[in-house]
Image 1: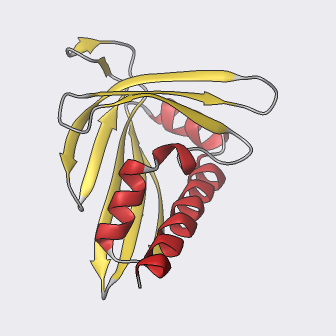
Image 2 (image 1 turned 90 degrees about the horizontal axis):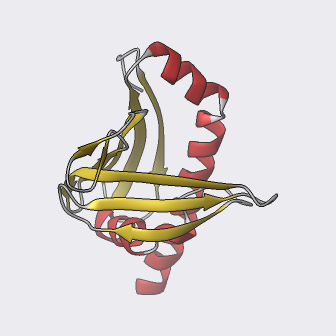
Amino acid sequence: MSDDPLVLSVTRLIEAPVPVVWRVATQRLAEWWCPKPWRVEIVEQDWRAGGRSAVVMHGPAGEAMPQEGVFLEVTPERRFVFTDAFRVGWVPQTPFMVGTMEFADEGGRTRYTGSARHWTGEDRDRHAAMGFEPGWSAVAAQLADLAESAARERS
């Protein structure tokens, strides 16, 4: 949990080593990125600083929520940071948040932390009201299920 009043975060201990969790997180994004029954369509994920991060989240009632942004940092097996404040080419757009997905070793297991830093308290409160905690916790559980299954297959 962050002491920053503009940050919302969730954390989960995943029973799989960091390299496995990282590989699942980055190579199987479509399988865990949004809580079921929602699904995500990957438009482009250019895994480098400045690279495009574009997805469309699809809801069970036909909703479509496009998300366009860039990666600010990609440090393999440690974290990736993205924002919707820019489109590819550093073209500014109306910002909502900076997202960070962190992966830390805890005795061969992975401490996953997903956080969202917002520009304003109003944005943070809106994100919380949209269901940040249950949504991002569900996503963390989906990532954990996939990574733990992948770790079992490797052993």
